[in-house]
Image (cartoon, rainbow, N blue to C red; front, side):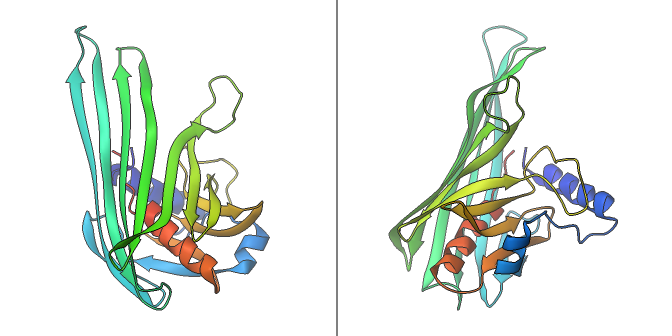
Length: 234
């Protein structure tokens, strides 16, 4: 789950692996050189508040809900995970005021010794500018980490569509200086036509957006990264 407990756990993992609180997701040399690291402040562990990134700022909300329903058999139960969030941002890095509304859902069946996902995790975000919907959306879903392999561990991947451009969203499971991958993604890369455009480090409460230095891609990476940053999965 991506509630407060999971975020704290990932933060502690980063500190243990890196020897300090500045552990960072592993980026390719090209991506590190081509982007500007922007600290995302104010969006730590709370369900709502205000945040700032570069010269822009805004407000956010997020929530994770879990409900358990008893199945016909005494030892069986179905758990529904639902939640989502919203944000709005304005400033020099975006045109006007950009806002997003996001929702997710997942369903599991617990049959005692076996827990099976009957509806895989899916996350959807819709965007607006100055209160009017724009032709943009973000989708993230649970996928096999190694497609085609039996019993492959799960990760998350998806795509961001904005401004007539489509960016693949690919998970990052490694931190700088470590060899073993994390169980859940520590961040994500934005890739278009095989080229890495930007990334977001979601590890713990200290988040960083690696944004293009100028142009429409900068805004796209920023609004996509914020949509991923408000995600709590519980």
